[in-house]
Amino acid sequence: MTLRSQNSADVAIVGAGIVGASVAYWLKRLNPSVPVTLIERDRSFARASSALSASSIRQQFSHPLNIRMSRFGLAFLREMGIAVEEKGYLYLGAVAPLRALNATQRAQGADVVLLNPEEITARFPWLSVAGVELGSLGLSGEGWFDGPALHARVLKEARLLGARLIGGEAAGFERGAAGRVHAVMLDGGGRIACAHAVNAAGPWARPLAAAAGIGLPVHARRRTVFVLSCPEALANCPLVIDPSGFWFRPEGRFFIAGTTPSPDQDDLPLEPNHAEFDEALWARMAHRVPAFSALRVERAWAGYYEMNLFDANAIIGAHPSAPNLWFANGFSGHGMQQAPAAGRGVAELILRGCFETLDLSAFGFRRLIENRPIAESMIIG
Ligand SMILES: Cc1cc2nc3c(=O)[nH]c(=O)nc-3n(C[C@H](O)[C@H](O)[C@H](O)COP(=O)(O)OP(=O)(O)OC[C@H]3O[C@@H](n4cnc5c(N)ncnc54)[C@H](O)[C@@H]3O)c2cc1C
Image (cartoon, rainbow, N blue to C red):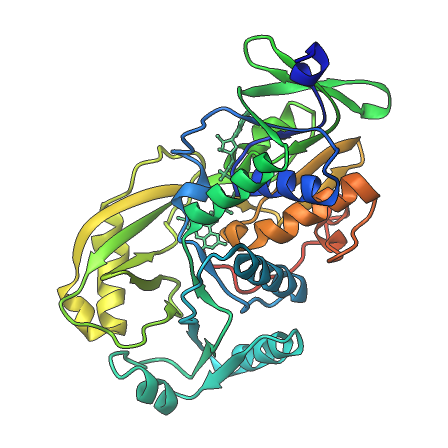
């Protein structure tokens, strides 16, 4: 092997979670001859969000581009042969906002229906409709899947197509004229020369961007997921989003559930906050599903949401100060489902110079620079 093939690549991708793996996969699928290197500091992925996710997919967003990205993700899951348990999401809430959202979602082709409280009770007799004016249920194309299996599959496919995965920690970038990146610098002294670099460092994307002098409002926010057993079975249980902000769904013979912590702080240790169940979840869950008064915590895990505190939407594309440093970050809790579309989009930008499949330019840096946040009302904290 020549020195060039070991220490250089056309595209060097930092982070081999689902986003980095997806960028590599699409680069190689669209152009098998482009040399691609993934740089990953922890090949066990023990702390990667892609290994710690709730791995669910929905079409119930308020921004059409988020719906389109997730629909692309759904098609990709099907193409990869990853089964989706299509039990739907059930959002519970007020009439006016859910009606408006339904119109947007249906216009994008989402198979979503509105249910009044009587219809909710008829479908889900185990659910209390106290305080609920309307429900919005995905009838198909929404549910959950094996996230680690998707990640492993995409990474494997990328490598089979010729992408190289190396162990190492990216510490910064070597820059040249007009801010162009010439190499990714590794902790401990190595250097991967490249024509393009990609920041796919997930919840750790902000320090990596800072190493290039770029402010990225992506913060690592710990989320605890509780695995719960309930003596009663809940027939046809979807992923339920309570108006008070918590969520739950079945997971095999158990349930999993989570909520937004308060206060929501940066970089907390990646250990579950067991107190959250008693303090913030149990009473609300038992209020919504009386059978949940007998819930038992089996175990819990914690992962980082990579929260974009500017507007909770993905940031995809290059910053004007570094035209060949590409970002795919800040998915704010929906990066498993959006990684296929984001990966394809970044690959198109690098190889073709523009988006071809889905126009993701609304999610570019420009909105941050011009202080124009994109509203997305259906963020699951
Ligand atoms: C509890 C929880 C529930 C979630 N539920 C859902 C859901 O239901 N549906 C959904 O779509 N999404 C969900 N998400 C979000 C989703 O998991 C993430 O958006 C997605 O996994 C992000 O992928 P990533 O590749 O960007 O990040 P990661 O998977 O974190 O990968 C980043 C990788 O970069 C590596 N890295 C970082 N810095 C460096 C460096 N300097 N050098 C080398 N390597 C580096 C890390 O080691 C890591 O492996 C959830 C997340 C959590 C935490």
